[in-house]
Amino acid sequence: MSQKPPSAYVVGVVLVVVSAVTFSTAGLFTKGVEAGSWEVIFWRALFGAVFTTLWIMNRGTLRQDFAGMGYSGVAIGVIGALGTAAFITSFKFTTIANVSLIYAISPLIAALLAWVFIREKVSATTMAGCLGALAGVAIIVSGSLGQVSLTGDLLALWMAIVMATIMVLYRKYPDTPGAGPAVLASVLLLPFAVFFGEPFKVDQTEIWILAAFGMLFAIASVTLAEGAKRVPSGQTALLSILETPLAPIFAFFLLAEVPNTPTLIGGAVVLVAVLVSLRTKP
Image (cartoon, rainbow, N blue to C red):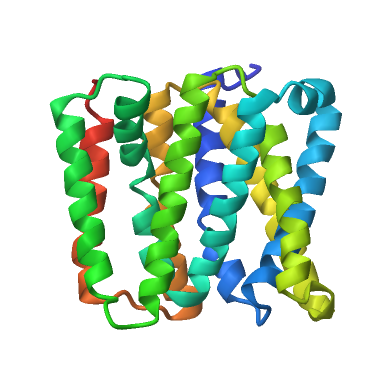
């Protein structure tokens, strides 16, 4: 008997899970090389832009993804570049656990921003979840006060705000393509990375590692976009949360990073707040 092909829903779930697992390796690549932040940003941006553009060309949507970006797509590209620079740099200052847990509050910040700027309704439970998540982040950051890791925590928080802003822009302008602005964000970072860093002095072995980083980022972006088309948005968000616990687990086993007590407590508060909010319909 011939087996039935997997349903679109099952394929979508697999794609979103693959995306979450892939995204969770960002800290490993960044902290696993000797290259500085700007060097990592350059090579990751270059290869990410190349691989994503090749995917767009293969899909036959070059004009739609680039020429069809409009002002909203350009804005998302610029904002995304600012966030990516902070995100990559944050790993050099603080632990992977801190970055991933702080970044996890992005959907809740997006809910607040959408409520303020585009009058999108927010339930009482979601609002409570937002406050709980912010309290969790405050606990995490308290463990870094007076230390260099505070810089990394604040950069991660900036990235969370940037991602939330991008989410709101996509809600406001839903016809904005996803791949084009992502490539634009990467391209915009290249001249700054050359000016502030020395990407061409990076060891060749590390360049290959960062090339893999760029390729995996492109894969993560593509699989998330394709998976989200097949899975309800609420479930997509829940599956994407897999990235949050996986990142510190990988960091523990591969880099021997052990989260401190405030991170564990604050992280638990963040995860509970996010999960409760995502499971509640506004």
